[in-house]
Image (cartoon, rainbow, N blue to C red):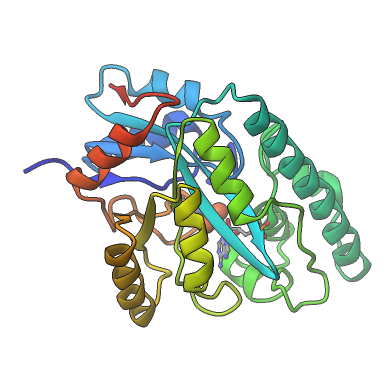
Length: 283
Ligand code: AMP
Ligand code: FE
Ligand code: FE
Ligand code: ZN
């Protein structure tokens, strides 16, 4: 039996609660064969993850979860094995992270009108240069005793309809696919069939992304609805897209557990064969 492949995880470089080293150790403890580190809009965790995997027998796939905006919807795109020194990737992800930080600051200013919280409380919950998001505001609210955990924060003060929310800058999915492909990477749409605000993206848009180089769909993910998965399998067959599955592990930040959904070895082989920007790191 090949050991499990989990292609979507977060470290403290974005909104996971474990350092890249701890994430790799958790993947080894969970008996994974392969893990992809896919922090939001950042590759800063790659070197530490590679070093931590050395000698463990775990394979690390360098990746990222790129934020994109499709009209009012936030569409996440997994990017694997691209060149992290690509100038467009560096500039665009820096622009997204800057926009996220300023947006988080504005959200906190609005929350601070009603609750005892300030920007320093949020910075205390994140690593220097990391990708800031609502999870860090959630952690600050928890530390202040204002909510019990991240989930409770997202259900109340951080909900997009709470009145404190605003979006942040991100490229379109089409721009995202083009950028990743140009950097030698392999783009896979993350959890494309989640409920509510992040609806299934329509077939016409997917077809356009496929033409630009979209390579796969993350179908086995706890946030995809059952109806949505059926539709995604049809799309994968029709457009010859790779099907992936993954946990979207965030350490203690979410209930998702490593290896709860996995990717078939053949799917990973297709991704690796298509990649030109960087290589898997065999620990
Ligand atoms: P943002 O990108 O700042 O709008 O925040 C969205 C991020 O928060 C996503 O990356 C999710 O991983 C995380 N998130 C969303 N809902 C929850 C939740 N209920 N509990 C913990 N984290 C969440
Ligand atoms: Fe996240
Ligand atoms: Fe996501
Ligand atoms: Zn994710």
